[in-house]
Structure formats: structure tokens, C-alpha cells
Length: 150
Image (tube, rainbow, N blue to C red):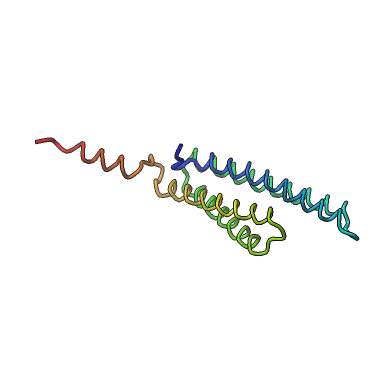
């Protein structure tokens, strides 16, 4: 199934993947803090839980924004989605450059890829201006079939 403008589906996939990867990242952070000497296990657990909740809320809001942009085909919602995903891209790129472990790097790279994918879909939806999005092949085939045969 090729997604051409389904920003709602793309942001749902982004929400699920990033939430699951961040569970692993936060658990790794807590375990690493608890196993080192002098590490404050309880403080890290609370801060990791708070950070995870912020991530889930942010990507949940992005999911709702992506769904509304798809349903309403609103130019302003598409621009808002592109801006929010660009912000996700910039933050994830910074995190990827300064990763503490391999799982954090994997999470940042997945976040970058998914943000770019959603931006691409939102721009396609934005360029359609509320009309139906078709691939170039179908449009060319239809144009040629409309010409009368001699």
C-alpha cells in the first residue's frame, strides 16, 4: 500500500514506533543509572517517566494534527504539520549527533526518517489544494486516452 497523502496514517505509525522505541530508551537509561555507583535510580526513573509522557503527548498531538490535515485538507493544518515535523527533525538530528548509546541513535534515526516521510506526505497534500492526489502515470494515461483515435 503506497501512501500518497494519508498524513493521519503516517503520524499514527510515527506515534507508535517512536513511543515503543522511547520505552526502550528510557528503560535503558534507568537501568544504566541504577547500576552505576552513586547513580540516583529513583530520580532517573521519575525524570524518564516525565520525559516519556511528554513525548507521548507531543506525538499524540502530531497524530491528531496529521489526521485533521488529512480529513479537512486544510492548507493551514498542513503548514502546521510541516512546521511541527520540521521541529521534530531538527531535535532528532541534534540527538543523533550526540547519542549516548546505540538504542538512542536508532530512535533518533527512526524519528528523522518518519519526520521526513510525514513532511513529504504533508507537502503532497498541501500541493493538491484540496483536490484528489493522483500519480503522474495515471494522469498521463488518462490524458492520452481522452484524445480521439483516428
